[in-house]
Each structure stands twice: as structure tokens, then as C-alpha cells.
Image 1 (cartoon, rainbow over the protein chains, first blue to last red):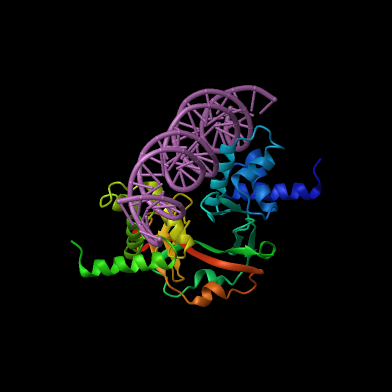
Image 2 (image 1 turned 90 degrees about the vertical axis):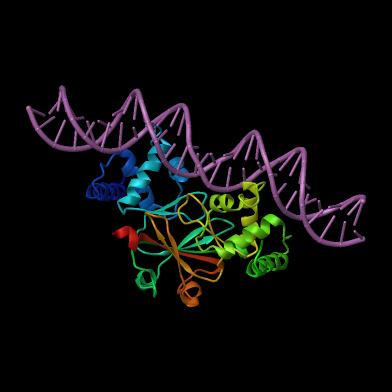
Length: 143
Length: 143
DNA sequence: TTCATTAATTGTATCCATTACAAATTTGAT
DNA sequence: ATCAAATTTGTAATGGATACAATTAATGAA
């Protein structure tokens, strides 16, 4: 059975979807809830594995297409960090990422908005997304 | 026939390779020369297409493995901008990129070194690469 | 509620960039 | 010239992502 909190989270997800003009299907709500609650920058694979336990009929194609819709609607960020897997991020507030090349851990880093938008000498361009990534070895993996 | 300038460029590439402990094979020299002279952030495909005219026996596998070696040696940057193709950059001096989502044009943006390395509140990490990308529509594509 | 319309999901087949690998070739040193 | 080690080559395989047609679900009107 669902707790009050879980219902709230679901209502938020449904409202977000409706506001974006997306029908709040079982699958979409579940996927949006998932990335709203998990700060691990999950891949399609990870989201599919987690949710197919609760929604056994879930198709991986649906996860792909839903995440694309969410990203287009501005409800998620799609991060192409390593060229192997696309990672998704429910946190859409501007922030950078630190990625450990060994363990794959991805950590959010929140910085000034200026960092993102007020670079000197940017070419004449209508910028709509910024991706800032720091690659290296995390504290654990240096030991 | 080669001009003096072309010979110079070749000698630089050979020296770079030797300094990195990589044998300056015909293929490696050609690939390093190519990314040293072209500022278009080419993909494996583009480099292969261009060079296979001059080196008809060139294998795409060689282009892949060479570019990986160059990147590991610090002689090239590998950029995973769109998750579809990896782009390579012979300019290893720290800089950001502006990418037009429509025409695919990639433009270099040189900024202060502080931009890259002196972020506040970075987690304890040994950072060895920074990737800063601005996505949007270039001036031409907005018209 | 029922129904019709429209949108979303599913599963399969396919695409395509990248990698694995073994054989052939080239490189650099002797 | 010769030899060992490194590199290249070509083919086959891998695997993430997409296309697409059939099925199912969501919405709004009657």
C-alpha cells in the first residue's frame, strides 16, 4: 500500500506531465517519479530494471521514448557523459557533474548561474543547454 | 610533392608521437597531422574518409585505435558531445565548445583557466579532464 | 457507463558505432 | 638482412538506440 508521501510524489509527477502536455500514463508517471527520487543519474537500463519489477509488462522502448519526451519537455536532463550510455537527471536546475572514471560515480556540483550563462566571448548563439563535466578519480578510488 | 610547410607539420607530428612513446607509423602520423590541421572536431568516419584517399589500405579499426592512443597520450581530446559520434580535437589547451544542434557545427571557446579548475565546492577528486559544452542554435541556423 | 478517437505502449527487427580478435604486415634494433 | 615486438588489417561480434506495425490504454463526448 502507498504512504501519504508516495501519493504526494505521484501527484507531483502527474501534475508535471499534464503541465507539459504529456498524458500521465502508468509508465510515464513511474519513470518521472523514479528520476525525481533517485539522484544517481540512472541509465535507461537501470530505470528499466528497477521499474520492470513493479510493472512487469514495461518495455525498454517505452523507457527510451519516455525519457526523450521528458528531456524535450524540460522535465529531465539527458547527459552524454561517456559516449556509452546516456544518463538521465531529474534535477533540471543548472549544475555541473563530477564523474569518477573508475567507479562511474556521478556527483552533482551546484555553482553560480553566471558559470553557466555569462561566459566571455561566447559566439552569437541561442544557447539552450549547458553541460559541464569534471572527469577524474573520486576520493574512494584514489586510495 | 610535399611543401616545406607540410614537412614541418609531419616532423612535429612524428616528434609528438615519439615523445609519447608511440611508434610514428604512416597511419599514426597521418591521423595526428590531420587533427593538428583541422579544427572541425572530426569524427572517426570523417578522418577515415579523408585519409583513406591518400592511404587506400587504411582500416577504420586503425583510426579508432590510433585516436584512442592519442587521447590517452594527451595528444588529442575525445569529445562525447551528442552520444552518437565521438569527436576528436587536436587542440588540447583547455577550452569549451559551442555546438549547434541543427547543423552540428562545433566552435571552440577559449576561457580563463580558472573556469576549468577553480570551481567552488568541488568534491575531493583528482580531476584530469574537463568538458564544457554549450548547446543551442548557431547564428546561421536561427535565421 | 459506453463508445470512439487519439495517443501511448509493446515487441520485434533493424541500424550502426564501436570493439574483439587473429592473421598479416611493418617497425626498429641488432 | 634478420628477428622480435608492435602495429595494422579485415571480419565478426557486441550492444545501445531506433523504426515500425500491432496492441493496448487514456481521454472526452454522448
